[in-house]
Amino acid sequence: MTEQYVIVAMYKFVRLDDYEAMQPIVLSFCRERHIYGTLLLAEEGLNGTLAGSRNAIDQLLGFMKSDERLADLEYKESYADEIPFHRTKVKLKKEIVTMGQPNIKPIDTAEVRVEPKDWNALISDPDVLVIDTRNEYEYQIGSFKNAVSPDTTNFREFPDYVKQELDTEKNKKVAMFCTGGIRCEKACAYMKEQGFDEVYQLNGGILKYLEEVDSEESLWEGECFVFDSRVSVDHELAEGSYKQCFACRRPISDEEMQSEDYVEGVSCPRCINETTAEQRSNFGERQKQVELAEQRNEQHIGENVQSK
Image (cartoon, rainbow, N blue to C red):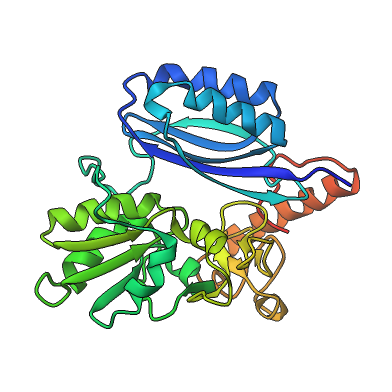
């Protein structure tokens, strides 16, 4: 039986004054063990998704946790038959999740965190506003029952949504969730700063909920978008049914791939009106090179490793 690859999603908000010095050390550690994916480092902490063999990922987690600042590093694991990344990147950033609010610090308390086993009861309360803090394209393929979407294209737009659509008097109890929990860390802190008193987040995010809550009891509907070659996962955390458009990176269904607007590597119904003819021509040339590389059993440098 072929050994499965372990995919580990990790993050932690913690002050890392030496994050720039950490970058080459972590990069070298991962490359030596054939660990692939992307890790973001910033003064406010780290965030990333990496994949490798079971032994390699165990070594990585041990290495990271040997730093006392990362001893309680948040992480979640899933598995795949094929490596979901083909490059190793350790990037330096101003924020490990970009909200455009670098001065917002996550709340260092358990009072806002709700464990997966308690989540159903919270979001079933009619007085609770349930917000999906992810992007609209993530929301479209799956979300919690009765959750609302801020209709954002990136997390930078979330503060504007709060200011324009929410009210501290009307929305007294708010529950938020995201893929792995990191966006909600900042979302909760931001909303607290804006005067919302009762704000909660799903601890560990959707992925932890799918892992711990039986599908028979689940209030999750659809699939969950993930940022690797699987594109989405189902309630059993197995690879989902969606593909990915190389042009816009959004998930697309088999039905959407039957549209005349879908051209592999070039366009899909979601992005056909967002690109110029010149851009689509360039995408087409790139796709030709990808196909030629595949015929030669080579990895093209511009290949979309997140498509399938």
